[in-house]
Image (cartoon, rainbow, N blue to C red; front, side):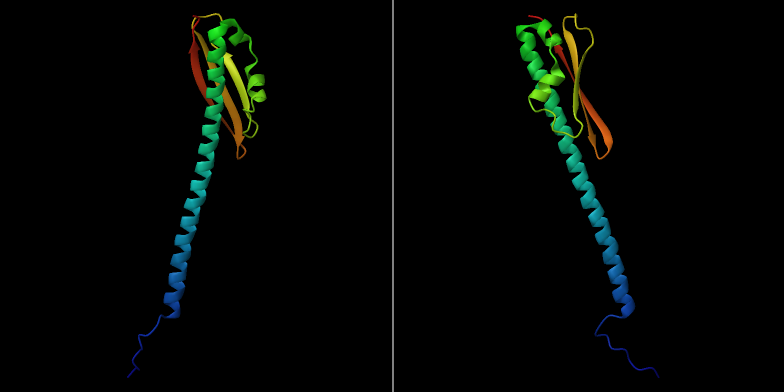
Length: 131
C-alpha cells in the first residue's frame, strides 16, 4: 500500500506551470502597455502637426482679409519656421493653391514629418474669398 500524500503544498510541476502562465500573461500585458505608449506618442505628433497646419491657415485667413494677393505671395513655410512651428522630427510645411487667381482661393497646407523612421503627413484645406 502506498503512503498517503499530504496536501499541504504544491508540487514542483504545479509551481513551474504557474510561473509559465504568469510569465506569458505579464509578457502580453507589457506588449499592450508598449503599444499603448507608442499609440499615444503617435497621436500626440498628429495633434501637434494638425495644430501647426491650423495656425498657418488662420494666419492665411488673417492676411487674406487685408490683402488676398499678399496671401498667395507669402512664404508660408518660412513664416511657419519663424513662428517655431517645426518642432516635429524633419517637419516640413508646404502650401499649395488649386488656382491662385480664383475666387475663392483654395489653399492646402501639408505638414510632413518623420516618426520612428516612417514618413507621416497630414493636410488641411481652406477656402479664402475676396471681400
